[in-house]
Image 1: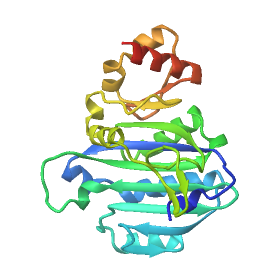
Image 2: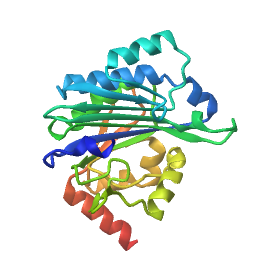
Image 3: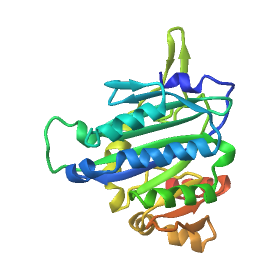
Image 4: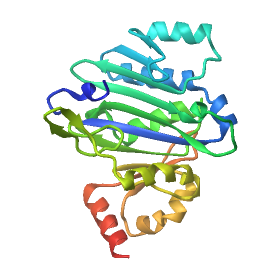
Length: 252
């Protein structure tokens, strides 16, 4: 179902990914429905079409209209949203995926996990100004610890961002050992871990300092932007600047 979202004529999507490190209490108290409302409002604001398919907690519940989902949440405010997927179909395609896997654990423990949001817009709507305003709206409801923007086509898997392989029996996306290691390390984003270097990087102060971002800025590599009502900052890079940084990283 997820891959069918991208069965279009190779359009480009601006995909915003956001992460928040949580323990069980933070996961339980996360304002999932309110955050999803803001995300859906942003999708509608850029005229991506109509939500046709809503799936909650891995298909445990399913709706065809977003209004029906809203009514259910109003009547069941304590319903735990572990996962949420909405699909919007139109000439310009968008999607919203939400995960709070800490609530999906069999046992309650003190280990940390993370909440993630993946929201996909037509690429021509996604720039620094758009991301600043979007995160500013979210920050009035919930804070996040890290994020980035990548630009994908229907040839990329939305989770791994890797190329989708086409074969006789359909399409697949390879998940490597490196991908698994990166996913595990996302709980360390407040200690400076960064997944990769992207055109738009949404960073916390620990990430900025540990990865020497201020040194790069002193070398005129990238631009740092503030986000109103948020402790995060946006580090914007051009393609040639990303290439320079990756070269420096691989050299050292």
